[in-house]
Amino acid sequence: MTQQPAGWYDDPQDPAQLRYWDGVIWSSHVSPKVSPAVEQSTIGMPYGVIPAAARPQSPGSQGAQGPRTVQDGFASPQQGPGQQGQQGHAGNEWPAYGQGPGALGQPTQGWQSQGLATTPDGVVLSGWWKRVLARILDGFIVWILALPFTYTALKRTVVVFNDYLQQVITAADAGSAAPVQPTAELTSALMPVTLTMLVFYLVYEIGFLTWRGATPGRMIVGISVRLRDTAGPPPLAAVVKRTAVKEGGSILGAVPFLAAVSPLFSLFSLIDDLWPLWDPKKQAIHDKVAATNVVVGPQPRRRA
Image 1 (cartoon, rainbow, N blue to C red):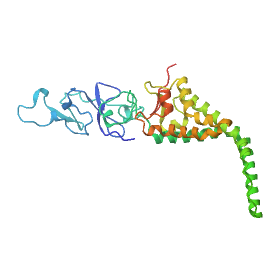
Image 2: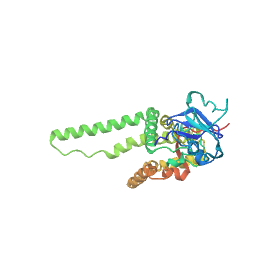
Image 3: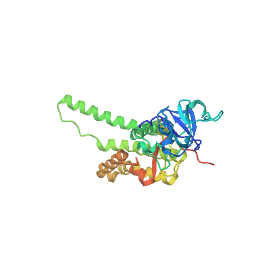
Image 4: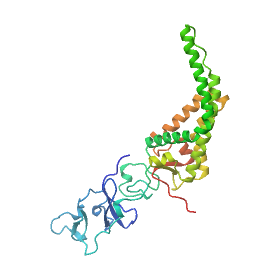
């Protein structure tokens, strides 16, 4: 994700003032909004740069703005004692979705202009690699959770494969043709594993997204799922719709009489996973069906 450049932006906690973003975190430097005029604004300007209206001018051209001074390293109107900016959040850390300008879900000046994809209310959208990493982590977690319930079927699969491998070695030593691969036996042994894993994943995905808006894998990566136009965990109907489309290829591929067309389901799943790479809203096909977005940061809890 492209780092937002340092500069002055709307204070996420107090829209009546500006706060300096140092490129990593919010600083404690704040300044009141003294004028909406563009030439007097410090929004988006590098630290310590004086606006055009505050620079030395020839006699008679200073206008009605009055003298300006540089205080605490940034330009501001000349103020009296006690009128300098107030101290910001303790520790210079801002608890927000994206940890930067616009992270509280409010659009800010200077943020949208950089071309960074956001939701309509200004929350930064997740990059594609974060989504991939989260899915890998979730798959590993589900596999650990389902392992006790698939152990017997996995053990049977290993026995079938070892028997076939031993037959291949014996045939090679005898100089005879290799035996036919026991496809039916392997499929029969793996089917319970596939179905158990799928059930666990569906319960895991739907449950966590409805409850928290993020699975443990997404929490580790720092992303979450929400409705595109509304913050908070998405409703159950949207999560079920999203999951059905996202895992549709896996669900249909597990049906025995549809095995002949399973490559088509796999192709759809691949296209769905890659879709955010070129979509302007960074939505996969399942996001578009459910009107959801994957964003940076957690979702606020629903009020009881």
